[in-house]
Length: 408
Image (tube, rainbow, N blue to C red; front, side):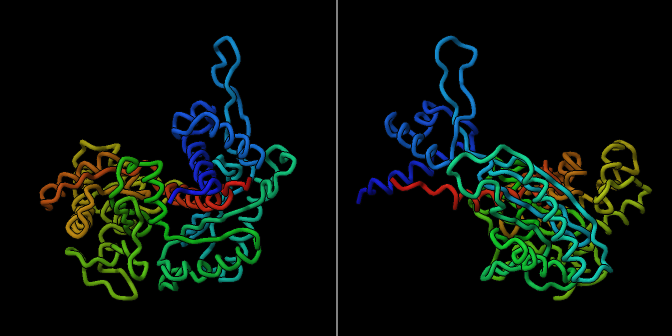
C-alpha cells in the first residue's frame, strides 16, 4: 500500500533533517543528490522546513566562483538546548549545547562523600541550573513564530550502576552514593519542562566511541571500561544490549584467576575489578616503581600508565605494561569467548592513557589466549566519552521530537 502524501512528506522531511544533522549545511542540490528526490520535491520540503523554523539559510556555496551562489541550509541550532551530565562517585560534570551539538557552557564540581544526600543533590542541581542559565545568554534572538527557542529540551545523564530496563531508572546499588538516585528526580522537579533520562556511563561511552571515536567503522564491538572501576558495554549489530535486568557488561564481578577470593552479590572485590580497577592498577605500578602525577579528576593509576607508556623501552615500564596487559587480556578473552565481538575497545581514562602501546600488548596476549580473531583498539575519547555519549543521546531524543514534519 503506497504511503499517503502526508506520510511521504513526513518521511522526506525526516530524511532531509537527518542528513543536515549528519553532514552539516547543504544546498538544495546536495539534498536532491543525497536523498534521490526530485528537484520540485526538495524545493517543497526546503520551503516547508524553513517556514516551520526547523532550518534556515546559513550561508552560500560556491563563493569563489562567478554567478549566483546556491544557498546553504542548516538546522536552526538555537531551537532547543540540551544538557549532559557525567555523574561520578566524587562529583559531577555538566555540558550544555545547542541542537547541533555546539557547546554553549560547561562546568564541573567535586561533591564530598560526607556532604550528605540532600546537600549533595542540591549542589549538583544548582550546578546544572547555573550552567543552563549561562548557556541561555548565548545566541541570537529567535526568528518570529519559532516557539521554544533556546529552552532546555532534554537532559541526558550518565551514571555508574544498573539501569532498570523496564522503568529506565537507576537501580539502588550498594557502594554507590544515595544522591545518584535522588538526582534524577530532583532535576525533573526543578526543570519540569525538560525530558530527563539516565543511562549507564559505560553504555554511553560505547555509543560515543561508535559515533565519534574508535569504533566508527564497527556495528559490533565491546567497550572495556578501565577507569575508577571496570565495566563493559556491548554493541551488537548496531544496537546497545542491556540484558534482562540491565546488567550486561558488569564485568567487574567476573570471577578471574589471580585474585584473593571471589566476588559477591554486594561487592566486586575478588572479581575482574580487583585486577584492573584504578586502585589495583596504581598498586601494580607501585610494585614496579612507576609513578606519575594525576590530572584533575583523573582516577589513580592513569598517570602511572601514561608515564609507563612514555618510558616504554625501559625495563620497569615494560614489565609494568606487560603485567597490566596480562590482566586486561583476561577480561578481554572472557568477553571474546562469550560474544565473539570481533573488536574490543579499551576505554576510560586508563584505556586512553595506555593508548596504542597498551592495546598492542593486550592484542598480543589475546591472540594467544583466544581462537576467535578479536581486534583490540585504544579509546580515542577516554573519560570524556561519557559526557559525549550523554549529549548525543539527548540530541537524538530532542531531534526525534522536534524534527516532526509540519502539516501541510
